[in-house]
Length: 361
Image (tube, rainbow, N blue to C red; front, side, top):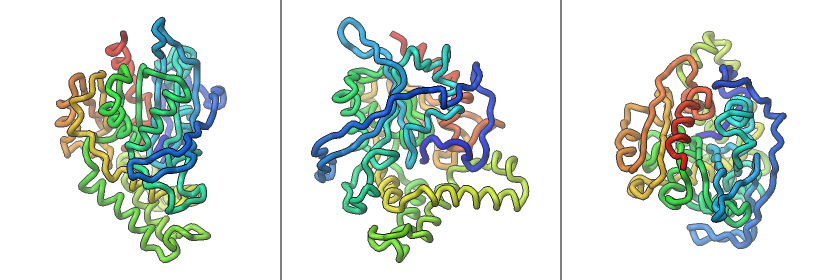
């Protein structure tokens, strides 16, 4: 659903780190850049004269004698997020420091802003609803071109995606099965978005479109009622029952948390961007092609994730189609944070370590 979101994610996240002290985000010095693609053609047939894909990197690429990139790691964020979220202490401090699993002195870590998100090209740049109707295939194609044409990366040691990035990782796996040594999708399902998940996404879009102030996307001020309703729905499914009750045990505390969250979200959201972000999943469905994936896959969901509820049994069914696939359902405990568990490697880091060992050449 959402990208890696830090500070307040419905509540203050406080955890003990996995095997090392926190590495403050400000100690990391990523390189930033923009990859400009001329006349990018979308699957819809629409084109954009100049597509901007913003990205950040840590570390330096390494290549073997044949010129194959050996240490590249691609991290993909969730809906409405950006690659910058991966620099937060709860993520970077657990994975990127000296001796940690994705030590930035050993790995070349790449985290782009997907089309329609962060500082990459999006509707709010000026085209509004005339912006091309991108989908997940377009977003993955742009990521692939960023790696191969701009960063000169021809292979990935690991591809890890959270939420929407989790779904993108499945698309990567079936589209470019020989491009990576390992896949780690976190917090999604590799099937068509239907049922309550689709209904919720449509409700969010309808709330914006049915606001008279939306004006077909040509508003001068944000359509507050529709946007607020969409943010309410986004909040509701991203929360975790246990942690919400523990952190906000009184009516006053719960109301104050909601008010703070909504105000923060409304200050950064754009209605048109949100429409595009949630519509981009409309034709996602890697399920029929999962047998194409050749790399080891470690798929992880959390039992308290309302968006991907374990009672559906979908992950257990679909992982059987993956030749070297494994699914882990994290049990609800004092550390899990519902859908947001995808951003807490202190919880699932041991599984990443297992995947890296399994996929080592």
